[in-house]
Length: 514
Ligand SMILES: NC(=O)C1=CN([C@@H]2O[C@H](COP(=O)(O)OP(=O)(O)OC[C@H]3O[C@@H](n4cnc5c(N)ncnc54)[C@H](O)[C@@H]3O)[C@@H](O)[C@H]2O)[C@H](O)CC1
Ligand SMILES: [K+]
Image 1: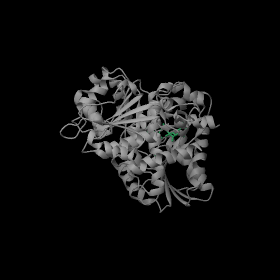
Image 2: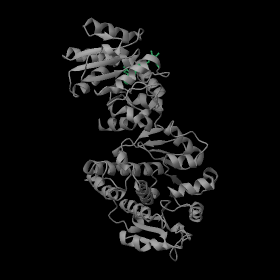
Image 3: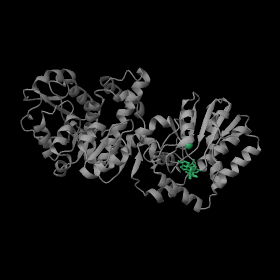
Image 4: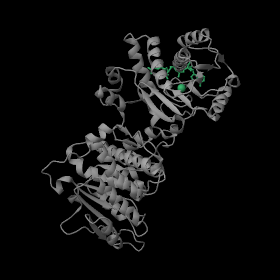
């Protein structure tokens, strides 16, 4: 049972894949009406927990409308006052039958929004994954009116008007308070542009057989949703009782400038929180005392500086070269004057995380040709602005973040982590992890620096264990977000400065592990 729920929680599908999976279930003999009845019953049970007794139900022409009508009927039979709004004259057969029966029970059905009496909440069953074209004219007008209402709106499957794959608004879309995603997570739930419409997201599992999911998605689905179980299986815990510090990885961070000293501290604190065995931090010479005072356990390497206070070149301790490190993370706070060191680390074969100015310098060097020459594995961690600078010729991530990150990884051969409300991580061959939960509290200067250090530290510890790099990166993104969520719970969304975040990294993990 645990197993099935764990697997279902990771699955993410497109509308086409959902239709194929659904097709297999029907072909195997499950009557369409029976499935609709089952799904409607499950939604009703959840709706009844919401409270209120006066309900407006928005009914579309397809099976999303059919689901809504089953809920309307069930609520009516349980004593709710129910009104239907449906401005359509033609319905799919099953939906039409449900509408006829609902009306025979005395549930009123209106075509005009003004006719709907005041309700405690609204159920949105206008369109699900069958939405084909933009919503226009009077229906778009009505949706915009519903959005101005104060009452909660509960959407069935997906807010009507949202594209199931890209998450874009097709003409007009319902802004739901809560959305009950049916059966399997749809891609739109992880596209930043849809999040304000989806509200609180909940999966209603209706027992889709695992074999049907596998038959359509394969044994290694391309797009997966990150889960706690997955993150815990990747973390370097428990440690071997006989390990020594060099077996727990050696991370080199290259970060900071006179102008951006704090970025170096935050990156290093992120690296430290990963539990990495040995931490070395290369900074401009003048920052060394500051870093030593914050991280007494780290080896702080002071490097010659440019006139502007950037690292001029790497000056590693005697008998050390880049091959001494199990992973390198480079970029936060460097400024654009540190081009030479980015070139130097690119030429090494070490696992490399590039972030912030490291990415901006890479963009100036020419992202794709430079990465094609690299011997080692590279992780890029851009936000949308950096992404566009790195990959100016690829589709804009604002339209479809998942497709954009997949294209970037394929074109560059790097593992690309695209930051956002729903951070997505793609392997060059198209495997994607999506981090499903985060908090706007993390939209704050310095929080990305912490992530860079954390991912670097995890990679340094686990890279030699045969764990796929994208799994390590996704675990870092998950851990970072969970720390932000816990910190925001305890301190509000205003209380999660990047320094505080580094302290919650340990706090959140001890809650999971104990
Ligand atoms: N996932 C499952 O296995 C189950 C899904 N259920 C529900 O069914 C819908 C999908 O149903 P479908 O009938 O295919 O599509 P829709 O209800 O989303 O709507 C299609 C309907 O609407 C017309 N249409 C499309 N776009 C527009 C537009 N812009 N303007 C006007 N009309 C439009 C189109 O022609 C069709 O007639 C899924 O989301 C679930 O809610 C099952 O009930 C349970 C199993
Ligand atoms: K809907």
